[in-house]
Amino acid sequence: MESESGVNFLNVAYFFRLLYNLLTGDGAIEIGGGGGMSLWPAVIAFVSAIWLVVCLLGFLVAVTALMLLIHSSMRIAATKREEAPRYATAHPHEAEVKRDHSRWNHVLSLIESHNESDWRQAIIEADIMLDDLLTQLGYAGQSVGEKLKAVDPRRFRTLDDAWEAHKVRNEIAHQGSSFELSDHIAYRTIQRYENVMTEHGEI
Image (cartoon, rainbow, N blue to C red; front, side, top):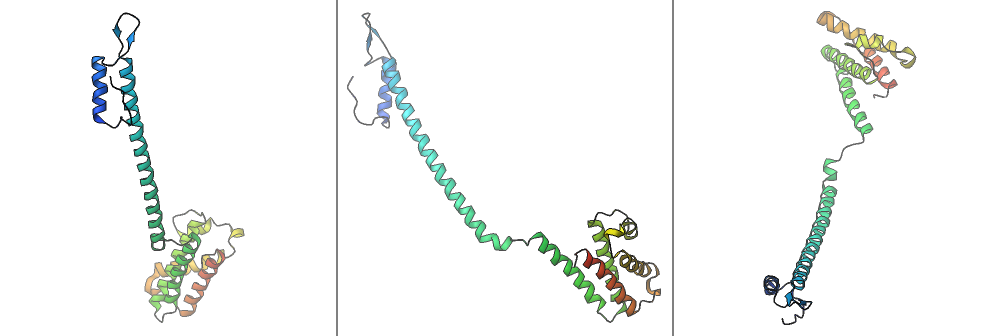
């Protein structure tokens, strides 16, 4: 068997030569004096060549995957930076303040109207805000009245304002247009709601 030189593990003909030697025993060494042929040299050479190819291919695959991962990570980071301003959200505290101020500003716009129907709507909207506030504070009940009964006066300095304002809301809800709502009562009621909201940092 002729000696092989250079890098042969990428040569297809080299593999067939090894396979041929493996099957025929050509080029194998003799063992002892019996003249028997050993296939181990051809087997070792064939397996070694296969292992070198597998290692090389594995290295190439690993390097390619690493490059793709780095590239993808850079693209994702760049995309996030570009889209951050579009999808950015306000700090939870800022968002809450903005939302509450928007609702309260709507109430103020209604109470500043010259129409009595707007005053009624302002009081109803303010009472809804009071209901939400009581729920946030952990007071349970089916109505604002039930929640106010559960309030601890020591932790709710404007409890009287809440009750008085809610009573006016009930008059509007129960009596409808027959309840005469003067501008003085309307403004005073909204002022009571405002006192409650201010105490608990809602506006």
